[in-house]
Length: 277
Image (cartoon, rainbow, N blue to C red; front, top):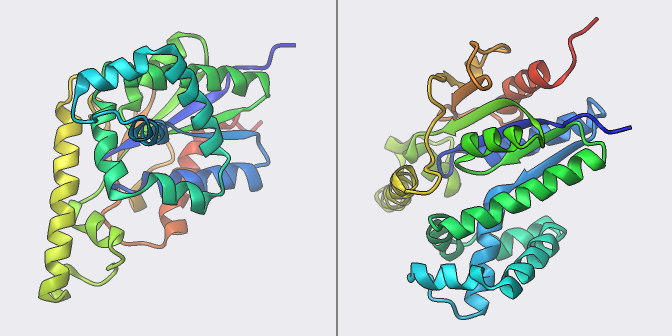
């Protein structure tokens, strides 16, 4: 018997908006509390792995043509697929140390702006969703950027049922303070040096978001027609929207991680679980 299509929830959003933290907690809840087979796919991680590979091969990441030429070589593409799989199975601490450095983050923006890189990522997503169905996975949580459009394409390809499109935003100063470990202390109470560090980090986040919103390939934009909710006020049912319900979730308020995740968990339950009989 063919397994049913997995239900897909996309976790999209601005840089440093905290969606990765939320999606990880949602995955744990679905697996450990609902006892449902769930798969978490980090699409953004693909670009970071590509950065690592291209740096190892000596590719000039400031040269778009060099990026495209690297991925045009089937041998390089196959090597990247193997490396993505290898990195996925690394212990989290090792994976984070490899991929989540300022240099890798900055260069992943350059990679993500290239059509060949996006095509490489999309091909991997199609493969992973086919694998998910074969393995009987019921819910796929897709974490990344510019995913609303991707989710629709995957659904049109008959690989999933795209049931929910979530886009996370956060005030850049709040994001910067979280990144630097300075929350929940108010910005106004920081000393001059710490404010300067926060301001610099916030400027980097703002620049990243501006670049992502204006790029020509899969720009990172909120879902059209979606309403914005503070994370603590997220409803369990969203207004009807074609092709699927969507919400813009503002994480600027400071709450414990589990408290922030709970409204998102309830929303995922609404759209991923069968109605109670």
